[in-house]
Structures are given as C-alpha cells and as structure tokens.
Length: 393
Image 1 (spheres, rainbow, N blue to C red):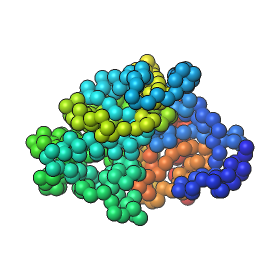
Image 2 (tube, rainbow, N blue to C red):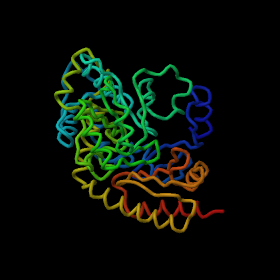
Image 3 (cartoon, rainbow, N blue to C red):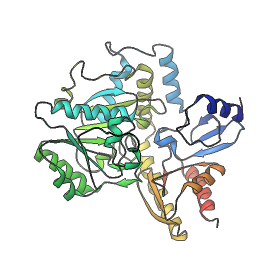
C-alpha cells in the first residue's frame, strides 16, 4: 500500500494522539530507513534511543527469529531461559540486583514506585521526590512523577505523594524531605527535559541523603541506560549505586521490553501477588535483550560510544561558533542536546525533508542520539545536513 492509502486508514481507525510526519516507513538497516516511495533517511535519533544497534541488527534479528520458532510466550508461573539470562546480564553489568520484567519504561517506573511504597508500608512513608523537567512515563502515577505541568493537563486529580524540586539543587532537595518521604527518583541524564546532566556533587549528595535518612534512590535509566553514555549505565559515571533502577527503550534493540532491577534486600518486598505483568519477560523480548548485551560486548560498542560521542560534541561545538542560533551543546556519550535560541520544530521538519531524522524536545533542544555502532561518516553526513539547514536565512 502507498502512503496515501495508509494515511486514509489511520485517519479512520487510529486515534490521532500523535502528530505524524507524512511518511510511511517500510524498512530499515543500520542507521538507514526507507519510506514507501524508496526515499532513504539517515536516522540519528534512533526512535527515542530505542534502536540502540541501528535498525534490524543481524544478531537481534537472528535471536528473534530463532526464539519465535521455539516459544513466543510463557506465563510467569514457569521458567524460561531467555528471561533468566537477561536478568543475569542486567545484574552483572550493574549492581548485582534482581529483576522484574515488563513492557515499557512507564511500566518499569510504575514497578519502582510500587516497590518503594510496599518496601516502606510498615513505616508509613510513601512520598517520592522527583525533579523539574523530568519525564517518567504516561501512566497516571508516572505522569504525576513527571515534574512537567504540560503533561499533567487534563488528568487531575493526580496521584498523591509526589513533590518536585529543581534539578541539580541539593539544598532544595534536602529541605523538601520530610518524615513521610520514602524515595528520591531521577534520571541521571534527563532526555525529554532537554539533555540535562546531573552533576557529580548532586548525584553523590542524593546518595548521601538517602543513606542518612533511610530513603531509596531510584534511577530512571530508561533513555540514558544500556551504553548510551559510554558506560552500561549512566550512574556508573558518578561512583555511586542506586537502590532501584529502571530500563526500557534500548533494552530489546527495537522490541518492546522494560525492566526494573533492585537490590536483593529491597526486591524481596515484591512478594507473590503484589505486582505482575502478563507479557513481562516474555521469551521473544528477552531473547532480543540477551542479543543486545552480547552484541555490545562482541562489537566493543562502549568504546565506540566514547569515541563517536566525543567527536560529535567536538564537531557540534565548532558548529556553534559559526551559527549564533546554537545557544549550547551538552551531552554524555551519544546522548547529545543542541540547545537553540529559537523554537526548533521547523528545523526538524526541514531536516526530515532533507533525509535526516533528529528530534526537538523542550521546544528548543535538538536531540542527537544515533545508534551505538554509528560511524564517523554517518555523523559527518548528518552534521552536513544540519549545517545546511541552520545556514539557511
């Protein structure tokens, strides 16, 4: 079917809660995707960082095909090898915790919120502090945890027990803690909020406050985790460990999956019957996740992230010197924000027309998040297109 025919189907049968570009995507390979008319696009956004290894990486495709022919779904009242192996990868690459699997970042954060509360159910503590410009999901609890009023509009009353303080403001955080606070929840690198990076002092200060006051430190690594920062998990840049961490997006290399991992003494509070997910940890998604971890290791992708991330930021800062429209460039690894002095929506539209996928968040911040296996020539091609767009009067 062509673009016009599919668009007519969408107009009739799909709820229009997304603003869609008039493009019908039909296939992808590596950093490239093609539309129904055969036009090729360079994808340096990776679909909100989901396509960690690019589109249709052979290892992920092979894992999915093999698993699909053996066992696609199994209830969580039985064991499956892919779920066990994926939990092992996450635990051994992070802080030795235990995993709960679900289907998305919002579900992973819901699980973290529920764990924090049930773990403190005997103490009467239930409040969770989050931070300005955060983003934790679209369910009613996670949208409440998201400290951006625009996401709250129309959904009142929100869930009780959440409060917000400025990001990177340790003094304000300490003042906001009371005798009902059970946890502090944050993204080490805020994605939707504009690629805002937590300072070392801030992260270590939160860990200290949690230890002193008996609070849980919950890190949302849904977007910044899985190697995007140059380490498996962004918290590893700060010489601290969280009590609970959430993952999704890139975890399945394109397949829908989410996970929460928690220290064993905390994880045990999720007793049988307290939380569940019908499709969580299904063999198909977990097999893809195992392939993602194995590929990161085999292809040395964390080193590539460091090299290509440094190169990208260096080139973007050079671009900033010649284009006053760029206010700032910031990022870690291959999670980079290009802050503009103007609204970036039209720039992104022009990039798409020119064959480049990027994204604008927070109105003025262009997100640059290519696959971890991106090559220098891909970055150069993308920056050449962006430069041409920014250079137009």
